[in-house]
Every structure is written in structure tokens, then in C-alpha cells.
Length: 113
Image (cartoon, rainbow, N blue to C red; front, side, top):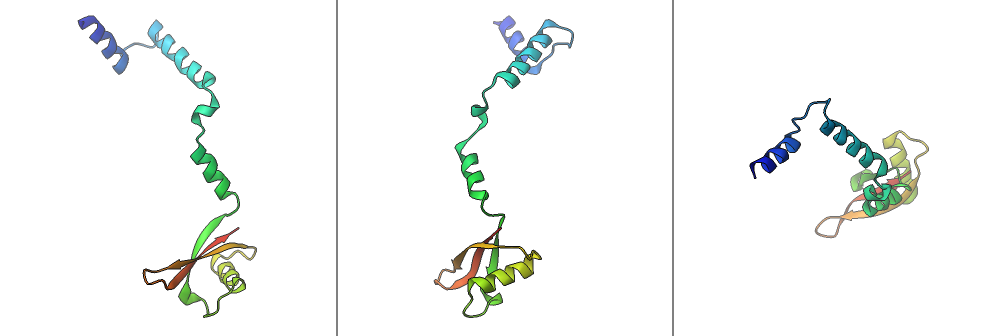
């Protein structure tokens, strides 16, 4: 039992020198893991879903309701976004209202590309 504990302790704390066969086995195991592990083990559906969502939009801005006129339309929002970002080529792809607890529109989430 003591010998088994010593072996496990030696492996866990890696007390072997570089010029031993144990070191060589570890190096071969690491290389085998790197080159033989299937790529699919590291891909997740969450990552693919996020990438698909982000392809269409570069960023999302929050535009305050006070910075717009009472009858704000997409053209006015686009003009404000271009001015605030300094990007004359900014293109508004989507606008969503942000409401407070009373149901009043307080801001707009603007997806731009």
C-alpha cells in the first residue's frame, strides 16, 4: 500500500528528472493528446450559435430616448449613430425599444454594422 501511495505521489507531484523514462513517457502522452485528439471534442454548439449571431452585427448601441425627437424614425437614429460613433458608413440593422417598469420607452437598442 505504501509503495502504491509513493508511485501516485511521484506522478502527481512529478518528481522525475528529465533524463528518465518516465519523463519520455509523459512527453509522448502529451504529444499523442495534442495530435490525436479529435477537433470535435473542443467544439461546442454554444460557440457556433454565438458566432452565427455575431456575423451580421458589429455592435449594439444603447441610444437614449432624450437624444431623439418625439417622432424618431430609423433615419434619425441612423444619423445619431453615425455622429456618435464617428463612422459615416454605419448601417442600422435593427432597432429594439427598451422599456422601464411602467412600460415607457426609455432607450433604443440599435444593432449596427
